[in-house]
Amino acid sequence: RTTSSTILDRIHRPSCCLSLERRWGGRRIRIRLRARGRFGRPAFVTTHPPLAKRPLIALVALAAASSLWALFLWGQLMVVRMGGSAFCSAEGTVDCASVWDSPLAVAVHAWTRVPVAGWGLMWGLMAFALSLAALADPDRAVGRGLATALRLTALAGAASVIGLLVASIAAGHICTGCIGTYVVVGAWSAVAFVGTKGVGWPEPQRGVVVTGAALVASY
Image (cartoon, rainbow, N blue to C red; front, side, top):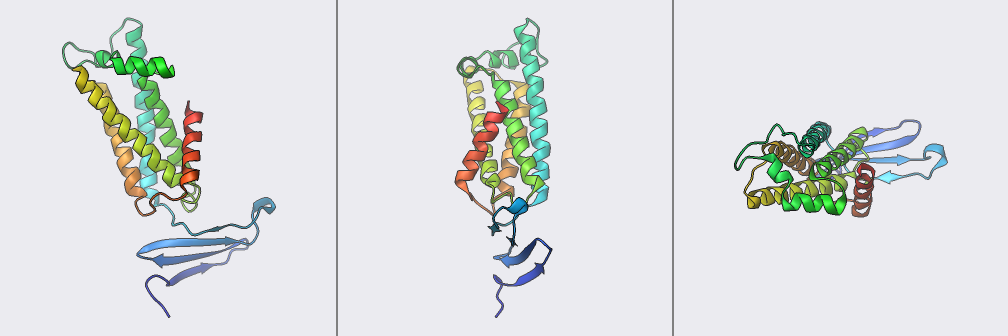
């Protein structure tokens, strides 16, 4: 008997494993059985669908751009601290330096010993590492908790953008340099959710652990 959810597309029989690919609800699901793991490890079975590569490539590129831009803004902050002027400093409402010296930015720096631009760099490095790890093995990324980690990182990025934007408006100043960060981080978060919408929040415990490890490593 054949139905749309149980059609067996292909059966691969390499020397090390048996891999089945099925169509389930319009999505491809790969089931890989390994009779003997690498270096004598126990066999594993995965029924998670693979992640699409194109969104992962976009995530890697956006995360790299976010990291480089955050590093540039951190350098501009150091210039301001040494008495110079940033490229986006101006008189009136549009002034990056005023935003970087806002009560929120000063509090974040005092509590964490890292400026807001440094946190932007840390987020970019986290996003880059998680995206690259998922792209390296999209078939097993979901089972390893990377899909959930990507979503958690996207939530953190979106929340930080909204919070910083609200704080900037409340302070009466606009940071034109920060707008670039808002756009890139917002785009990364959107692509992360769209690219993982078919899997939801699988392996939540692993996802939290992976996210925490990436945060500690970036710090």
